[in-house]
Image (cartoon, rainbow, N blue to C red):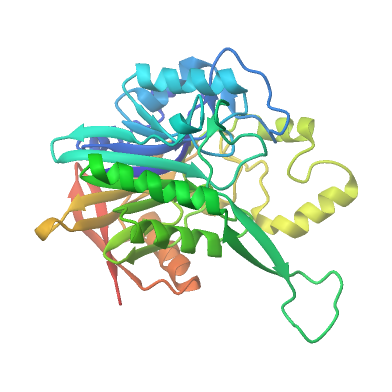
Length: 388
């Protein structure tokens, strides 16, 4: 199985978006991504949307043609175009032979796993979102996404003094109903599948390297519940990787081919992400610093910090004895915003694995990368080991 992070193709010649990885994806039994937006002609802006990520259905060929076999629809752009656009997107994927998970016409449908029968057995993919606008969650008879929420608590770092305005310590506790549903879903999936993979849209995209306690706690909880791998996304920058109880946790796979044409114009129109009056802009610069989303010269479709051009995809294979072998293929996003595999031994590929090693070190994850261990259809795979 191969697994990428955020994907949304919206460009001229969308069928060429994944031209550099088509061959390696074709060698995999299943290929996953998080589909970050709506493909529909029937769109109605969700009132709580920030900047809607929507495109005409013709762009979907970049996702469906010889590329992905299963996508998550659980993310903070799932309902940007309204209920009908979400359901249109799901229908378009399924009609094109791409399985979906994480969203549907009601909560029961959103919680259903995508099931794929492969030459190595049945794969179940469950998908949830922890980051999304209010109202995007599915309910008993209301379309939406499968939520995995947490409640946030703010406490002072120092308990012996008053200090108004000081940035607080942030901790979270899981929404009990969502956590119980997650355990039920994993148990049901395990009863029908040989391998269960769980996807989450989560985390703090405003800072590099950082993992929230919600991410670490939830990822380990689903492995404890019987999941075989965890795939995280949303950060737009890579995050650390952990081997926990022999199971891989990819905390953040970044974005893979995520097109945001004319984003600055759309941000200004919506007065979103720090666009607005002078005070709002100043506070935004303090919040995001150099990682503020905005125009990047030479990269018209990718308005993120240069580190956002460092990406790649997970590779899950079968090792001896039936254990899961975890790997990663480093890729670079060029000005055309099309991911291109590179070797981890030098140049851009080395920079990517160095970055991942720093991600792990910043969060004390006991992880080691065995660079360019083997090739899969010409793509160099770096194996991941625990140093525990």
